[in-house]
Image (cartoon, rainbow, N blue to C red; front, side, top):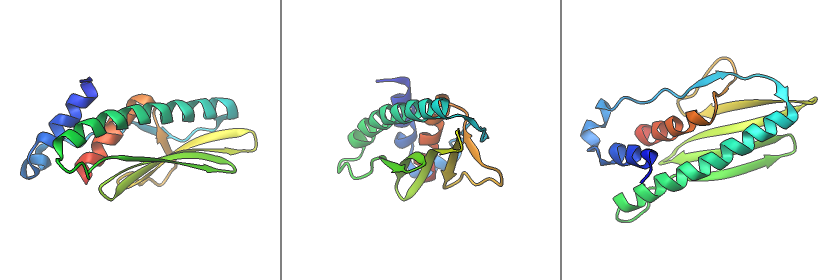
Length: 140
């Protein structure tokens, strides 16, 4: 098992009554920045690929923990004319990671349950994804 799988196992192995004692991780974000279109596309693709890997690892642990296997993380993509996005969901909660392309620039955005902000925020980078997924697991 990977270190991330051990982390997920620890979270879901904790009884419901004690989960309030687990510190909910802060997801590292930054103000959304306008960057070159190619750089934005590369970042989005890298984030999406890493998200898929982490979700597969987490679901392997979740499936082995839940006998019915009905509680797993979901991952689905959205492709719009000027935007690439993916959504990660678990038990009715979700987060959306997107990159919008406009006038030769790109900018990222993170929206979803528990990620409200007055100013547009984006993930700090790929290292923020494990915390995002664990946060969804704990918030469900």
